[in-house]
Image 1 (cartoon, helix red, strand yellow):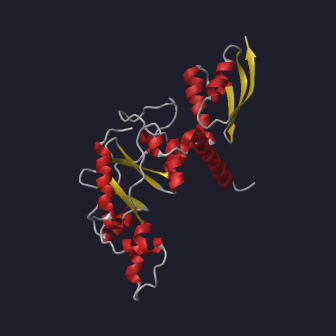
Image 2 (tube, one colour):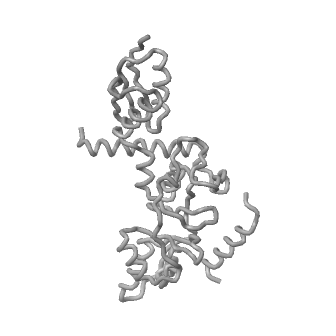
Image 3 (cartoon, helix red, strand yellow):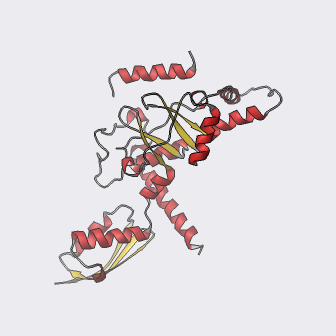
Length: 282
């Protein structure tokens, strides 16, 4: 029995068991990275280090089952349908798929769309290198080198892939998925349903955009949802500026309305602080 067959048998057994001034763009990019890392760090401080079996499993009954009502979910940002290949697809066809779809990795699925692994450019690179070598390799002393050379003999996606695949679920928070991607150093994560079937894919760029909005987007949400929607104010009455996630509000507003207005703004995702220059009127 091969390593993959042993892994598959173990997985099936577990499944049957009961479950338990720089340039402006550079400055903006650095600010986004700072806030992204802050979000990932916040996730780790609330249990992100826990092993998957130690973490509470998210509900699988829908896309949005939030522990925190405003936390973005993977199901909101994933790409669907996801490109995938079956395990019997030849090496060259996998390479063509990656090139045609402009992907760095692709999930490998079985006949029932269960994700059984991921095959990436790195997996294919060892195969291509061995094919290009005209002389026998030298002594393979290191275990990692021996495994790499052994894998390079594969001819299909199933024999070249890395397994088991690291996956996330639609109901997982974007912050949790970002932490998973950061720890595993993966650019793409397959998204699976409660039966481990492929339903989409999420990239690090998708997670970053969801975690960190730029200042313009934050200001637009304040003007549309907070000023107009919640407090029935015209945006022209209140001057809102956002810089690096810090919101400054100026203007004249009903004295009874001001505290709630400031707290509504402070509760928005990606708002780091609110500078209150409002003048209360009766």
